[in-house]
Image 1 (cartoon, rainbow, N blue to C red):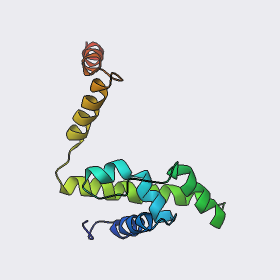
Image 2: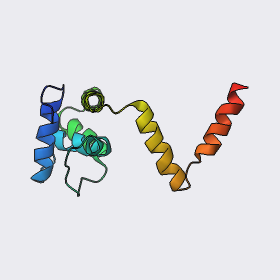
Image 3: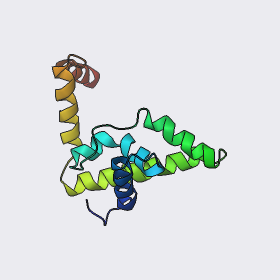
Image 4: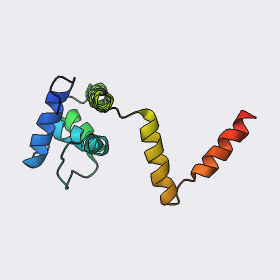
Amino acid sequence: MNDALRGADLIESGLNDLREGRETIAALLVAIGATRLRNIGLKLPEKLPHNPEHRLYNLLAKDDSDSAHSRYNAYIRRLVSYERAAEFLQGITLRDKLEEFLSHYSKNGSCSSRKLARNDRQSQS
């Protein structure tokens, strides 16, 4: 983990909390970003909290319900900022992520890259 990235302290704290079974703001934030964080090489526990988005919001609302929404959004922005910076440092591009997405969904029959390409050609004409 690159400690120089904005939000690294929060991510590291969340990883430790998850490993120790604590449900904290940081742990729930890491659970929300689990897929991208795993893709950048972080080792997350296999078992993660169910529905971390709602659990995080409810945890924030317990402390101060009036500011829960804005604090939730601020935490999500910190998570996304960390994820983007870490992906950038590893050379992971938007194209890489799009190709992975299309490959995954075309294999599972949920999305056809040929259908997407055909729709794209039709929209250009």
